[in-house]
Amino acid sequence: MEFVIGNILFAMLHELGHAAVDEMGFPILGKEEDAAGSFAVGQKNLKSDYKLFAWLYPVGRVIYPAGFCTLQEVGRAMINAVSKRYPKQILEVKDIVQLANA
Image 1 (tube, rainbow, N blue to C red):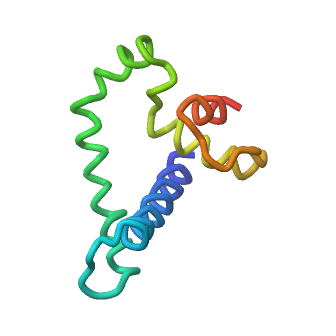
Image 2: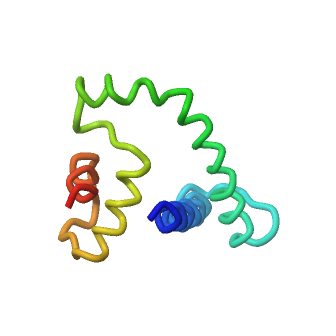
């Protein structure tokens, strides 16, 4: 399951790289596909940074449950959104948590 979630997160970050280039007009050198791939790979460092702030998650979840979710919940929610055909097109944190546990 972790392998699947990891690949889904990579694909999501790759497409987010495309969105950053297209919608925000980020300048790139070379091919857009390479830039999107580099963006996704660069986000792997996010996981190490995530560990620095992980202690905030339980506190934040208690104080503001609609504003905090884990990367694992995001991955599971992505799988469930597709497999269970979630009706919303734009998901908020509470939707992600609900889908992750569906």
